[in-house]
Length: 272
Ligand SMILES: [Zn+2]
Image (tube, rainbow, N blue to C red; front, side, top):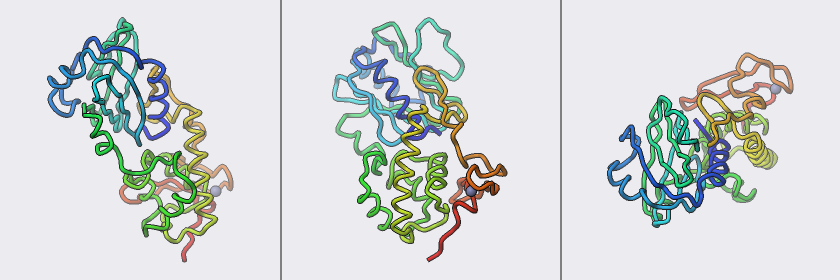
């Protein structure tokens, strides 16, 4: 699933591509990709101008000229691409916004778990994740957050109501960089571990954004380009391969129903 770096990359692309453009046509190919009535969506979106594009957690928010916003969640395989109207409409294209510059914004989704929904701006806060943005979080607030729970660190990082935007790829990479075992409990993290974890979270997410995200499965940015960060993965989906630091074999275990990849030597479990 696209996580914070991938969604941030898409948003940065769209900010250059669609802001100021008017929506002059809408084609809904798969109505159920829209939450709510597709007809209402068309009526209320048609003729508006795109004023803002921003990210909250893993969600894309497209602010319109009418005090309304389109919320887009790509879930597993959603794609949002800015493309010439002349290019053929490919399979899995479910919705098309025709823009005043002759280009189109197309929503594609192989698995169809993603969705779009139109909401009043006053509801955006309520309908997007509650958790803090990791790149806007201070070290002190992060420390307080860690010490406020007795949760396993891996599921904690994935919980969108604590920290928004981190998914399975980046949780594994962040824990590896910090040298922390995914089953350690948050309240048992020492000062040094919390400092390392905070630093790793900042570095991994920022570097992944610089590399325009990780292209696992279907992820592409708003220009249809793949990301590069998968080349830098240290543990994610590297089970059985040697750790790039210590040569121990990377292992994969299920934690909270999700696969976790880590190095048993670099990320030894600390019990207190
Ligand atoms: Zn190692």
